[in-house]
Length: 295
Image (tube, rainbow, N blue to C red; front, side, top):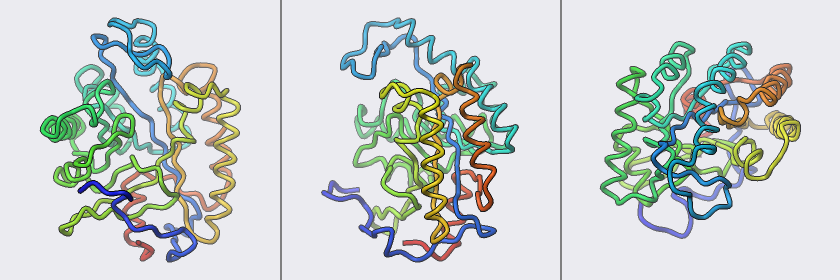
């Protein structure tokens, strides 16, 4: 993609699009995205999101807090989602395959759809040279495929970070959709030129426990209230034309004992409504393509 002032897609306001209908008349497609991440102990982790420079390694408290998510929190999330019969779409740092393969194998057994999410969460794509980025994306997707048995077709960059070459690299690796562009409540095509396209799927920086709980110091009750309010609005709008709702989670945050009931509460509220379709990323993208409401 060449540098440009506006995104690689046309501006199409949501009130000027074809009507989107989801399978079985659903108003709203809901996808659940646990971010399963690895931070090497050998790299410092900032103690606060406002710290510009990470401390020298090892940053034990910050690292161990995140390690809790992989040792304990993710298993609580799996239990809650399995209780509600929801198949998640986790974004996965491929280093998890080497350090915590049990998580990957459990996700596969649950029928979750794994997305690529860099090799590690400590190095973002926009911190790499063009050659490093291309090779890193290929390694991440290939490593996940080797353990999970299926190469991811979806991608979320660590930190939602991209370069001008990221989308080209993803398409070259066979990715069908990307979640970095939090610009809409419906999927849309991104045109890279030369007949190459990739779908942007709605992700959220609002209904996301990391900025909500960690950066903005919200409480779990406030987070649950936000999930319900987001759902109410999108559900009402979905009566006219289908919408997508993303619920974005981090095991070291929502997976701690005093917060996990909040996830159960929010999902119970959503599931009590008719016309809700819990889906994976690929299922949403394919249904959108078949809907005739593409733009």
